[in-house]
Length: 191
Ligand code: ZN
Image (cartoon, rainbow, N blue to C red; front, side, top):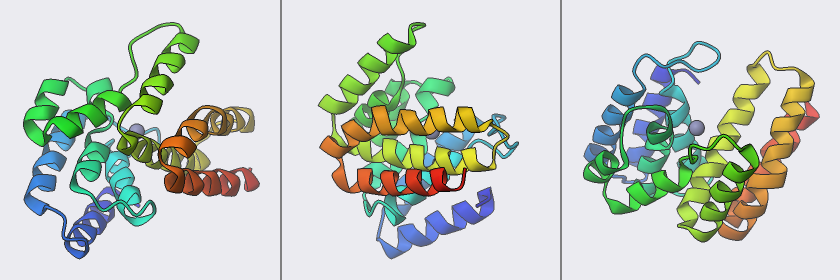
């Protein structure tokens, strides 16, 4: 799904589910501005990924909630762009700030320590963060299929979903975990 298609789909979903259109438009504008100039691995504008994650939250994970959609749109901003948590809070309120905070990887060189902190915070925090995390990995797994990664690298990324994300998601967002698990099985079967 390219950017115009994703935008049209999200707008349609927002109307169908009576989401707060003005609020989400403002959030999307801020996310687009923050990610301006960044590209996905396939060369697409980066914002297509947060858009697809937001669509997945509503359409596939069944969570038609303004704050979760906003968090999906903003989930990579604080980690990868100059946008700050204070700006996220001003824009979208304290719950979205908390969700984006939980979804932002701590800046640590030691990957094991980083993962330990990241996943223990996810496990203890707002379950909505686990919902968005599942949608994020679902989109990244689908993108991975189109990537030039070796099968070994693809298998390692699938293993990370199974070993690190799914155990937390099963506790915090079991319905979303089921969908992620199903997508992981589908993607693996096509390797
Ligand atoms: Zn992401």
